[in-house]
Each structure stands twice: as structure tokens, then as C-alpha cells.
Image 1: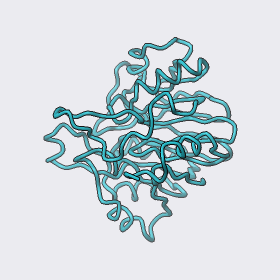
Image 2 (image 1 turned 135 degrees about the vertical axis):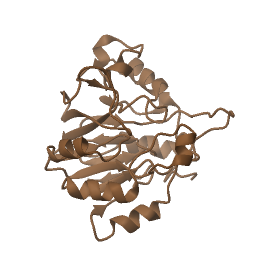
Image 3 (image 1 turned 60 degrees about the horizontal axis):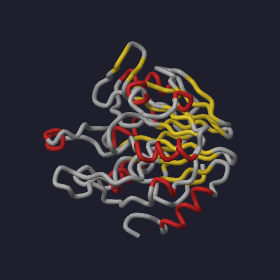
Length: 268
């Protein structure tokens, strides 16, 4: 179904019905996590993305309208790039659920036209609790580290503890020594969710900032002691994909893994 495992109506029902320790992939870097009582979304993009030529950049089409997305208790955003930050979805969630908490770099929260009570400013290595979820912001290098103010990075990964599990979603990142050290300090990690689309001069010439290559993601996940690796950032954006088979070839025999399918829940 154009990259989705189910219809829009079925996807809405599947998200609303997520059980404890279930995670729903929403393509690219987007996931919804459930502890059975609360739900959080991280880097979920349900809106379209138009390129300079007016064509959609999405190879996996938008699943539904922002107002059709089930309500979340928390929304996590790793950084401001358009395939990670869905402002219409956030505004819809805040309008329909006044208690939702939006966790994001300060530079993003400052620009969002939502009530102050919905903004969770936590800063580098800061923590916040949303329902049964405990969330820690970890600065990450999207090629390089960058901060808008001391202690307030513009690119975060999130360590998320819930229902007896600990998951690290890196956002867009490359494997630098500081991140390796920070991620090791999160141990024990049950799952690492890492980008695998890589980087090259041709994409950089088009302004596309790179990420880990499949081999780098596998080595990084193994080095930090992750129980299982879930690849992301490989399927959605025109001109910035990778054959997931190359990731599987690298992961086989080195680390446990689960390849996400948009719309098909993963039991953690």
C-alpha cells in the first residue's frame, strides 16, 4: 500500500490500540511508543514535503491528515529539519490535547506558537517524565555538534525508559567519540534506533547532511552494548534512501535487528 502495511483507517486504529512495549513505525525516523497507558511520538511526520520543483519528496505518502492522528501524551522532536519536525501535527495535537508535552531543542520550542505549558525545555542531558516515560536529551552530531546557546544543542537523541525497557533514538547522527561515550553511559540499552542512509559528496552537494552508513550503525550499536538495532532514515525521502539489504548484510551475525515496516507494530 505505497509503502504502508495497512490503510489509513487501519493505521489510526493500530496506533490508538498500541499495547505495552509496542512501537509503531511511521516511516523515516518516526515512531510511536506505548507503555500501555500513555503514548509518545518521536520525529513523526504525517504531513507532506514539497521540493523546490513542487513535487512531493515523500516516497512513502502521508498516512492521514494531522487532525486524524490519535492523541499523544508527548511529542519528541530531535531537530528542525522538515522530515523530523511536523509543525501542523504538533499544532493539531496541542489544540486537541491541552496537556500534551512537546520535547525539543530550545531553538525549536522558542519558535513554536503553542502555550508555554506545552513546552518542555530540558537542555543537554536534561530529563523529563511523561506518564510512565522517562526521557533524557543527548546532544548528537549531525556531522557536527551545534548549539544555539550554552547547554542547549540543536540536535538531540533521546534515551527513553518505559515499561522496564530503555531505548535510544539518535535522531540524525554520525558516530563520533563523544556520542559513543555518551551512549555507552546509557547502558543497559535494549534497543538502539539509528540512521543508516549514510552520506556522500553527491548528496552533500544538494544540501543533504549525512548520517551513519549501515556498517557504522552496526558497529556503533554493538559498541554501546545495544540488545537490538532498529534502522531508520532509509525509506522515505526521494534521493536520500539506501537499500535496506545493505544494512541487513552488515547486521547478520553481528547484532540482533528488526527492520521497521511503516504501519506494522514492533513488539519490544
